[in-house]
Length: 156
Image (tube, rainbow, N blue to C red):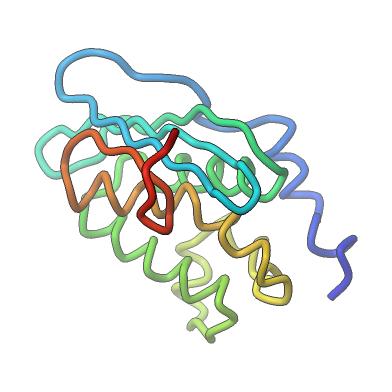
């Protein structure tokens, strides 16, 4: 796959017109900040949970087209899902960007995020693509504010 194919139209669209970009405030909002130390991509993910649902999901950040597009895709995809559904989507996305096979139903469930499946051919980009999804994992696992990097080092 060439880089031209990697940056397909849908990736460019999410980068230029990010969905769910912004912050959330108020009680019950979880904030997770992560930084990719290898390239400097940074994201803060905000999640408002109501019961077991991710009632609202927003993000702010700076980074490459892959990381910001992935954050847009993930935020739009998991909003309204239960924590278990969001966790299953995150696991499926990690498999996707590692080049592991997915069944058709799982690919369909990932929606626009399937456009990032070519990332597995560019290992340096996998951390970019998974940054927002790692933040989601932390928000689901910790249920509270956290900061750090996908490698576990603190964000500056």
